[in-house]
Length: 317
Image 1: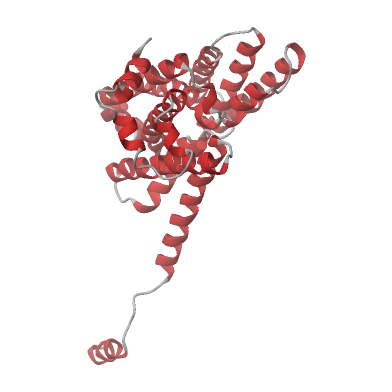
Image 2: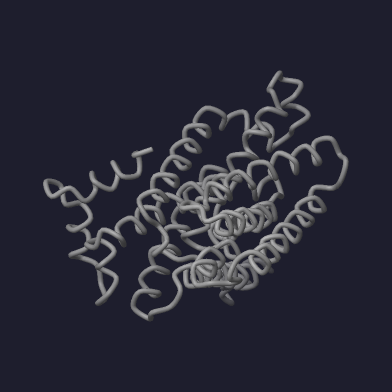
């Protein structure tokens, strides 16, 4: 369980000084501290890891019209956090991980067996588990405390060594699984019937994808918050689809918009003393609005036609 710690030590090792070297070139009065202070270094590493992984899987979610599942599982994870906090757990994210994985399996089975529509099952879990967490906190704990608000809206202070290790392992296993199943996953995304006829284990791959997305959502909770997970899981992928003409291009542009949202959001939140999760979400939404507006304007502005060109067209006619 020391994968995250090893990565942190490598990037912050005095011999290499990767983070400190980069930090010397960073603007602002507070933001360079993310490259110098140990606590903020962990937060920076975790933020970049979850952004990269969320962008890759978010692209597949967009293509499969499953954007809502990230939001639903995030609310489920909050129910797990509430139970963990009530029981006095040192690492409530493990409870969130268990709740999210079980819920993702149930949601997937309900969808694949066509017992209920996909959006219906997600909506039920979204509202039910959020309400469950709030009731548990009200009855058996101190209600919405500062730590609980951190899980709801994101708090980089909550990312300790244990959390960084968990986030790193989830990211590593998600990337490893995607490297193994990306062809099958893409085939299922394009046409699951044809994929099944080709002998691809559609149910197994789909179940793996659902479980992995659940784990990724849990890894994002401390960075951006349970209520704002879709800001990194969906918004960069949606923005990428506005400018890209291919699947590979979408993956690349998603990383560009995702990392820009995270780093710029961290910078602004540090300099303006605002919440990191809300600022990252705001930057991601602003990028989407800006790109969408530029595309809208480009489709309505016709190429310039000179009088000479018009005369030539009439002569040809």
